[in-house]
Length: 377
Image (cartoon, rainbow, N blue to C red; front, top):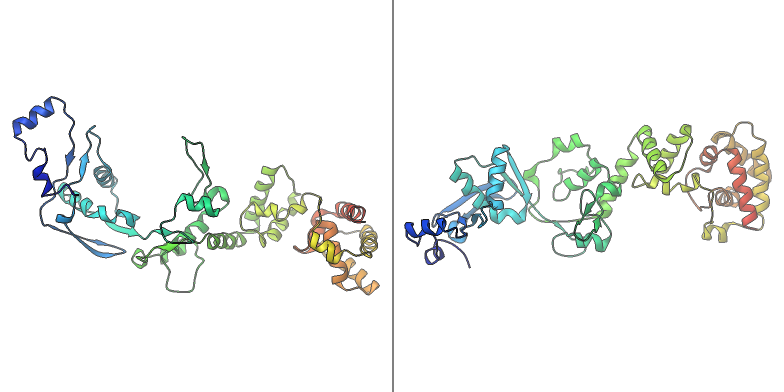
């Protein structure tokens, strides 16, 4: 059912009532709405940057309410006036607003104002099926749908945001830009300035784009790994402080660069390298079963004694000492390396052990080896 040029003639309104009756009802305080009286059989035509020329006949449109019974303007009117007063040049919004655009064009014409440029974006779709992406999908699949944390004041429920998850603004923008648009090349990673120069609304697809959270994480990972040592060190320090952990200032950059290869978010700089800040309380079961042998305690004791004798305890000296031991005992790295890593970090794999040992310091490395020998007897 439509309130239009046909049905309006059969309704109780200012068009069908006598003027005196209308005035009397208003004077009596009877509630009323104000509608947009659309012209009959008029073709509304406007250009959308993404969808091209759009044409709609007013016979297929409603006489929309502009002022509600309580005197408040509806979105349609308020939106037009607000955009005009703010001198908005481009209206960029989701495709669900496309059916309202002809009315907005008519309102601009009625006021004698120039219409802004319209661009109705395709919807972001569910990653695992048809339909528009929703908050419920994020809750179900474990990813945010809001830019920042959002709290429902009624239920006190908090929905996580991309900022709080650890996404960098430029990575987030890069991800969004490529949902429904591409530069026509194989390039995926853009700086903000490169996006500004390359992005073209006219090249955005009319079809919806499936949201891919894993791809978004990849973008963030690329941006994080591309950061300078100074910025990574600052990010690491912030994360450490929030957890009550400490790292010697002189090693912050080294640790940050080392852990960035395994990090997607800033918090990963700590979680992936927690062994650098806390002694192992458990040991990787797979490595323990396959690599820790009856010979391992003796080998660790031998390495400890050699480390103890080192005057300079840096990565190069540690590596030279370790390899010298392997040569002297005619042992392969695969025989000793995994046990050494397990004893010091509790892990089965990770960054260079020689750099790790330099960061930890001689006293801590020897203490950890001793602890592992005792625990893993």
